[in-house]
Amino acid sequence: MKKHDYLIVGAGLFGAVFAHEMTKKGKKCLVIDKRNHLGGNVYCEEKEGINVHKYGAHIFHTNDKKIWDYVNSFVEFNRYTNSPLANYKGTLYNLPFNMNTFYQLWGVKTPEEAKAKIKEQVDVLNIKKPKNLEEQALSLVGTDIYEKLIKGYTEKQWGRKATELPAFIIKRLPVRFTFDNNYFNDTYQGIPVGGYNKLIEGLLKGIETKTNIDYFQEKENLDSLAETVVFTGKIDEYFNYQFGKLAYRSLQFEHETLEIDNYQGNAVVNYTEANIPYTRMIEHKHFEFGKQAKTIITKEYPKEWKQGDEPYYPVNDDKNSTLYQQYKKLAAETPNVIFGGRLAEYKYYDMHQVIGSALNRVKKINDE
Image (cartoon, rainbow, N blue to C red; front, side, top):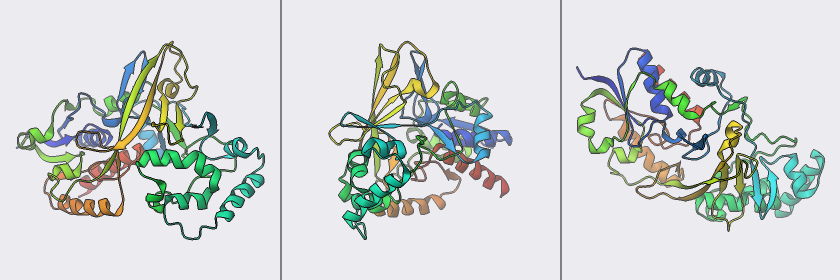
């Protein structure tokens, strides 16, 4: 008999939910993480009484009442609504594209006027079959919205010209003909009161955890501790990159504490012009309606991923999708290892989707 039923590699949302659910079913779990903290990318670092989203802004939103009730059973969520602004050459515009944005762009006051303005710009371009992201976006929203609010931001985000990006990245663009700045359409939205660490602590309560453990440096020994390994890291790394490395986009964060109580008046401001190197600025206290005397801002710089960087976004183009399928096939043939989560499935997941995926995996195992 091995000491544990499950060794869970990675203490992010997938690993924490999996461990919690299996522990409830009487299984013995050990959760390890190579970082010096639990929580993966949702981890918050408290500074000046403010919960700083260390790995980028995380805003919980879902239409799934079961998932919403699930997370709220560990920690109460506040009423935060994501209403970002876009800063283009010093002028502010509301996001997502809505009647406030159209009024700011053109002075139009009715949905009919806004629709006519967009149609006028789209018709002039006469793009029948968009060949790339730029043409796709232009064919959907016209020149003004594209040039001011999409082009620069997207090129910074992907590190490539919009004309070099495939059209399918922007299948549609949310355009609202109401004066509504709520970015998400989901029914439920908020931030955990006291930060995401409260959620992770609730999920992992009473479960053995170890940080600063590099799985690959001690793989043989760690594998011997459990009947089954749940791996939430990079799938290509697990298989020693034998088919080649999957591509990711990474991020670099520049945190700054300011001796004022309010810097930008909003949690998220996007910088959409190409010559400003960061894509957005986060002011963390606004996620929790903070009244602290100081404030903390974070500039977010996208970059190409290289070994040693944190992998954030999978590059789901044809080449990488084909490569992932090879690893996925290998994973399916690997006994006593479960691959789950954003990196192991090479898939961009929102938080509620990661939680749903972990809950489904547990259910499937227990139904077998």
